[in-house]
Length: 466
Ligand SMILES: Cc1cc2nc3c(=O)[nH]c(=O)nc-3n(C[C@H](O)[C@H](O)[C@H](O)COP(=O)(O)OP(=O)(O)OC[C@H]3O[C@@H](n4cnc5c(N)ncnc54)[C@H](O)[C@@H]3O)c2cc1C
Image (cartoon, rainbow, N blue to C red; front, top):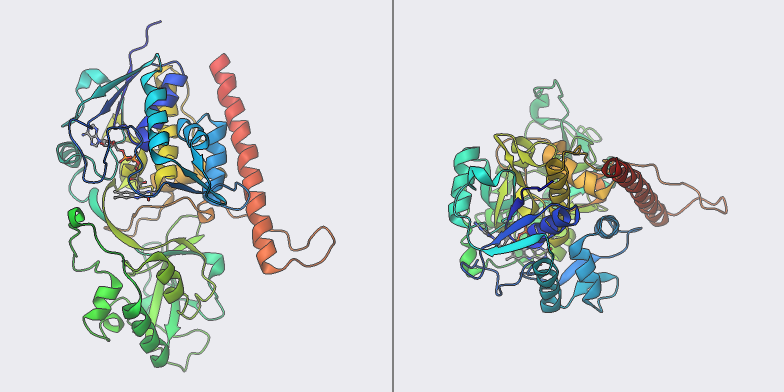
């Protein structure tokens, strides 16, 4: 049987991985990459899978770090990106870092030499022609304007963002609920009848003043000249709001009105930081209105001065960048296809994941799904207990829609996986200290993920053999 090729648009981290997975499944691929015919503001070379900034794929420990777990899962699925990263490693302690040129050259060579891959250097400057059939779109945060406009026309205004405005997210279990309390402003019921939808962290005057001072003194990241990020009213960085006047935040996202401290009802808070549930599991909560350009180290330091967040574990830190991404929870189905045009499947950063590894991971899934479809096999998503399953689950449905702009790019983190009770006692029967309990829990989540991934993989292999 002669199979018609799957077309992949964009030869970055996601598109390269998708093309590899499709080709390895026995299906021909045409990979369209616009560089060097047309460049982006960040890429410097014509290599596939160019790393535009850092040369690190972050922590490589499957038992203690969520991105390390994602590495492990991708290796089990024959990831091209991980294979080439492993082959081009440079010393980086517990992180997986690479010689960037060697890495990108290796990815380019592996794809260029694959008998089922045809590499075409051209910009796809609009929706792909109908005779291409099913297509994987992996054009990244700097998708060329012509294609971005065509997608926007298809999805509708507001459904494709060109900048992110990210507020930090913390894990629920790290919030001190002896200090914070649940309540919606004026106990107003939401559409689901919930009158205590928010978590509130109170500040007295001295705490608020110290917070504003820390915010203004903290180092900020600079925009790159080409990023041209506009400040929209309604999603200004908090430090910019604070610069407009010491009381601005207290009359904006930190206003204390309509709230009563459940622990100390007679103390009227001077300001309140509100957190809103971010995912259906209820494990992740975002700091409402706290989009920021503070450097990451400064964010953890300053935001841990908020009463109730002293021990906060940050699943995501804030940021503002030039970034093209879809409102995926609304637009994509469970296997990454655009509901309005299912022949288009999206992958990589444009789906609202963040980072090299996450982009490649979604490319890996999109490639496998596209190949399965072409081979007439079932498309089955990995279990939600795996890092891969948790990531795709979040972008295609797990995030709770809280209106315009609420879906923002996400790194892999343990808060996306179903919670699991950590052991309270060690092998010697002694009570485990808090830190060790956390470590043991991560290991258990890693073991669960890898076992579930193996079962999923075995069922896929069985189907392929039938
Ligand atoms: C400036 C910047 C710095 C970043 N730094 C980091 C970092 O340090 N660490 C990290 O983990 N993540 C970083 N990211 C985020 C992100 O992980 C990377 O951008 C990652 O490369 C995304 O992978 P991708 O495959 O989705 O997109 P890309 O790797 O950008 O790949 C998209 C490809 O599509 C091509 N393309 C675009 N439009 C078209 C078209 N119409 N036709 C044909 N080809 C097209 C592009 O040339 C590009 O090769 C950064 C992003 C930016 C913008």
